[in-house]
Length: 177
Image 1 (cartoon, rainbow, N blue to C red):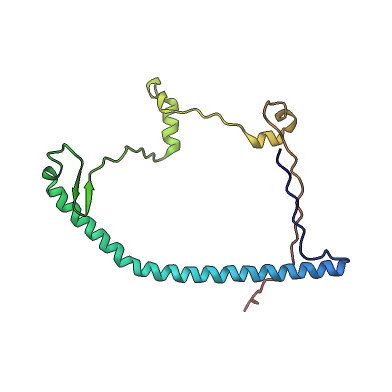
Image 2: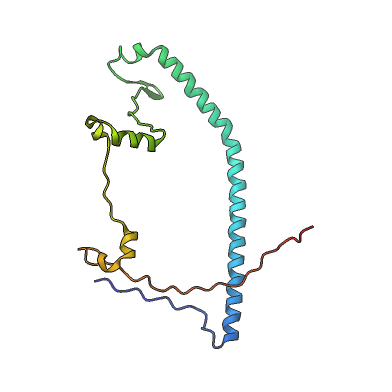
């Protein structure tokens, strides 16, 4: 059986009175704002760096697309020779290979509710296109914990308690002009 982890003791002594606790909450707010500003500065720097690299990458992306398109045109025109009349689906050049691959089939459903309603009312031959899904309703189990606890394998736990500290923060507001 695994040992329970012990909570790490803080490196700051606990406050000894209400005034000291209030000062700690003030310091917590100051530290939180400093961390938020640091994260904002980091995100600004990352956004600037990403934008600079994206700007440098755009011409390369366009050149890649142009080369890919030119190679595809050439290979499509010479496909019969390159694939041996369709016996193979790829051809190796000295610096790489080209291949023709079939994409897997896909289904797109527009107006899902309409399609579902139609399938529910459709003749029996369409029933294999429907799937009936059974799943456990955890919200219902939370509403009726006594009933849920009688189900084998189900345990309804306590919501527990969490300690939070929320420093007061003020927002700047511009007066109506």
